[in-house]
Length: 132
Image (tube, rainbow, N blue to C red; front, top):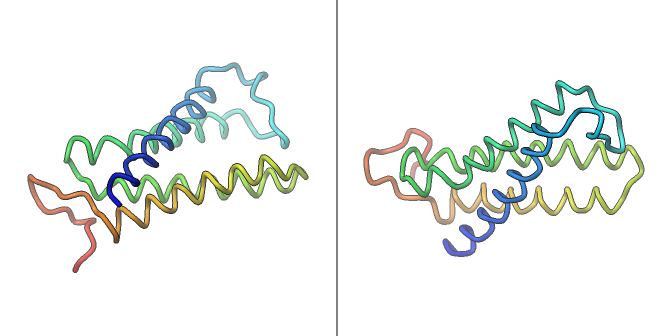
């Protein structure tokens, strides 16, 4: 199960690094979507996506606060819920389904790293780790 979680985490990290990086680098006039969103909100979402992507990989890789991985995945689920709703409001079904699938994968990582196969912290116990 841990290998499957690592694979999904890597794929999600690549997706969110690309999407968030594009929101941060591209000019605002090129960031058009199905619904017009304020530029500052798009930049904020880009920062959240990049930080979420880093949060999926770095805590488990470095073994520093690995309890942050399910929190990062949960934050990305919230972003994808918003993306799904906005895309559905615009009447675009296929992009909404893509957002829904990415959100479901992030939920899989959040649940998997919280309950099924949490990272083990070698240095000190994490406050965020669930009690057994």
